[in-house]
Image 1 (cartoon, rainbow, N blue to C red):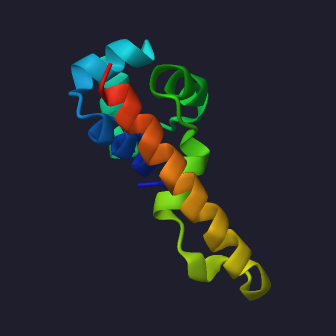
Image 2: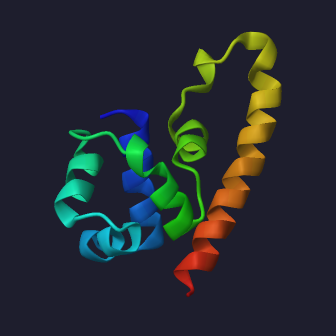
Length: 101
């Protein structure tokens, strides 16, 4: 499964919604969502849908939660980690606020 598919599944689970409700929010079919989360279909065409429905960018979620920091060049790791911490806090706050709707 690619990082964007992992990010898509993570966002839905963090929102604590089932696939049917998430698909409705995303304006896609439940089948399409299942394919995305299984890594069979790329979520790339639907990145805007995730941003609109859940307030987060799948690319940023993928980097923050699923990228191995050791793959980042050594001179950039410290700055990258600081950015990841800030993004993580923002993403978690955004998802928590949207869950409460």
